[in-house]
Image 1 (cartoon, rainbow, N blue to C red):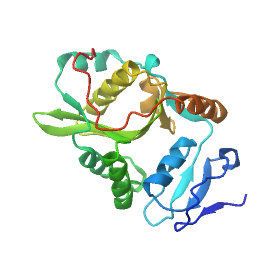
Image 2: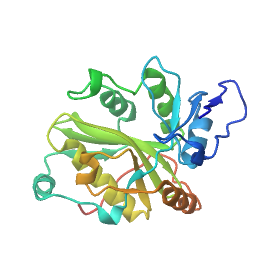
Image 3: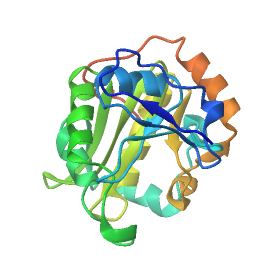
Image 4: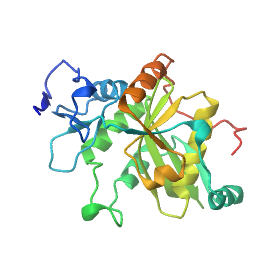
Length: 236
């Protein structure tokens, strides 16, 4: 398979059709992380994922992991945690801090490293300031203990990463986000790559062609740019 190479200095931000991706989902290499290119990627079902020292790699896997808000699964133990209200959860209160926490080494991760590079933090912070990238923060006694971040376009939310420093903290943040997105009429949350953690919350795999069809419909809805806040009467 010949690899599509993106030029970082090019004004042409187009990506090749996702059907040309490798069996693993790798579609293109190179380019840059300017906001316009990132948004173009997400609008076409593509996302960057690479390790430090590598060129930027662009992916569109098949199958794709997604979560439909109405299919959120809350376990009995997570429900108990939610009812105890031990975490204060907010939207867009500490975007950069959440990304930096997601970038920290974690036990069990191969090599202990991270794919969230400093240049990626800078790039997504630009998206956040433009109102397209959002974070959810879970705090306990004022301390950030869990959260997640992602990108929103149309009525689709593209989840990028989450972290937890206390049991269930990231899950509580995720449940709050899903409930708010459901109220706002969002069609799905793109979870990108499957994992047992996401499956436990109700995520499922769909074929890439199905994902692309759903994405096309989602992008017909207006964006919701700006700083997000949870509805005061949101029931969890």
